[in-house]
Length: 537
Image (tube, rainbow, N blue to C red; front, side):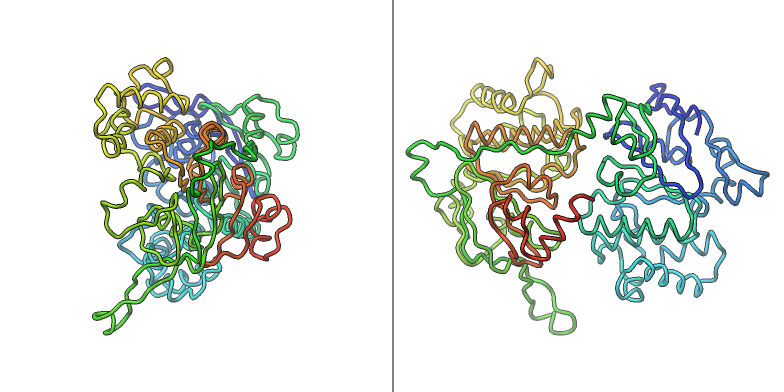
């Protein structure tokens, strides 16, 4: 690729970059959101709508050889390029749930690629699709081929997406954040799978990511991208050992740093108060349907949290770590009073009631910060309206001026003010970056002075440098206000940086719990050992 330039409506976002990928090589394109990584990869197949693309992308594939050698992908006729897409160059998208068609089974979608690109008959392509799923280590491939995307787990959907991409044994694979949404153990499995398939088929891979641990493990070479420019590239070991550019050094130094208070000096009243959250033999689950005729008349219960006991004192953080399906999110929903539970669950000494009116005071005590700040903030409400909303419920006697003053203070507490963002309270969420939106979400939770924040994967959707900033903010707020945190995550590095105690969950059970350093440095349970080992991936 030489002098690649991409612009939208006259505004250039990629500024004349150069890079190459040799046959059988793995190149990682690294950078934060907005650096131009994804649009660069999509432009190679001319999949970016309304974009002006110039430069050259010389590719030596089956179609290119037939045309007399390497061909410029950016200048090929659409019909010829269509023959390359999916066959010579394939792509794995970041979120398989949105990339896979919900109306067709996974097997049919894989078979369709083989029918269109390889000309296989329907029965032959169906058998090949099952074999591809089996090659991806998906259990019961015949049954899974008949499943729809929503019936598969996150890891299985990603494996199905890889099977579809590799169906025609492409020469080049474009992988856009293929493991970002996966748990640490699944992340390791997907990387191993991609590595094995890459060696077996001799294909080249362009990996787009902001995960530096993934780059260390997977890639041969790395190209670092900032604001539409490649600022540094070279062999992975060399770049990581001796980064030449300041931005590369900042990315490498962005690992979460532990800076938590070991104890919080509470006032006499708070010291004597009940802990913000405590549970004893907590059990929570869901009603699920029963197949067959019996399902018309009765349902069964799926127990997602089987027997959890814990205490979160004032000014302390309990980290809950585990894979998808371990029961972490169910535990959070029960703690927020959004899911019925049995056993004992007390928020500041009070139990959740089945009558919503009685829970109003408790809801002020415990607030939540969600994983994706973009979807959790209303796009139709201004920043002022979003942050003030809790006061309308819990302090209705306040006047508009007092509410605005409190909102301004809450935003200042999270590092956002009018000097930095003119007209801040009258702006909308889409006008802010991902990290800034998460700060808005934290301000919305803090304005009612809660004792406990439930943090549901608060940084997993953020770039590594922004993640470090948000974690530092949460640590500072805990020291200043004595907040308690229930931190739900699958990122062991975040747990190590933020938590005082940790609880490891698997299949709804607490398999290990205790002081965070004792558990993570000297894990006793086999599952904890796997999580800690995979956290370096």
